[in-house]
Length: 145
Image 1 (cartoon, rainbow, N blue to C red):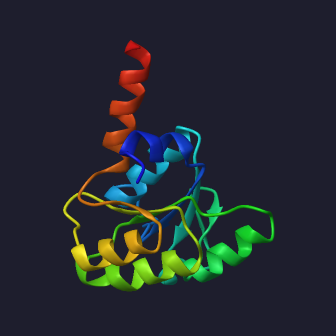
Image 2 (cartoon, helix red, strand yellow; image 1 turned 90 degrees about the horizontal axis):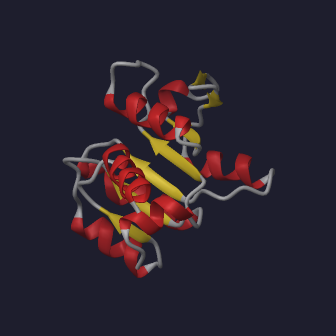
Image 3 (cartoon, rainbow, N blue to C red; image 1 turned 135 degrees about the horizontal axis):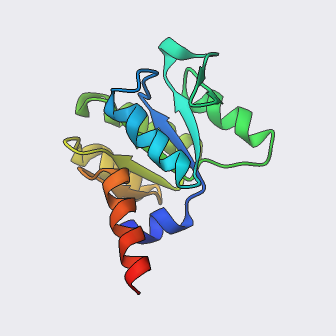
């Protein structure tokens, strides 16, 4: 199981499930930050499918996003979840099915059953942590080293 810094250092492509097109929403702010930090952001939100969010095409599902990326030889490294805890088990099953590397539940989101399922399938799992905050900590630590 990778640590949070290892996940952040190894990841290149992050599917953001529940990404909003509204700049004032946390999902949009976090995704924009990660994009500016050099990650490829893949919006996953059925309400925005086919639209462009942060310069990237939004997909209705992780399956659609993974299929589109696979055509370019790209895999989803992290599935970053901005959905309520009750939605996480389905997202975890989808993350397993598309062979994502990690399942990341943002601040305030925890689902132990989904975490156990994803972990048993070989995914790294993070619960109740913000990718933006964790990346900021990592960058600060690397700058001090």
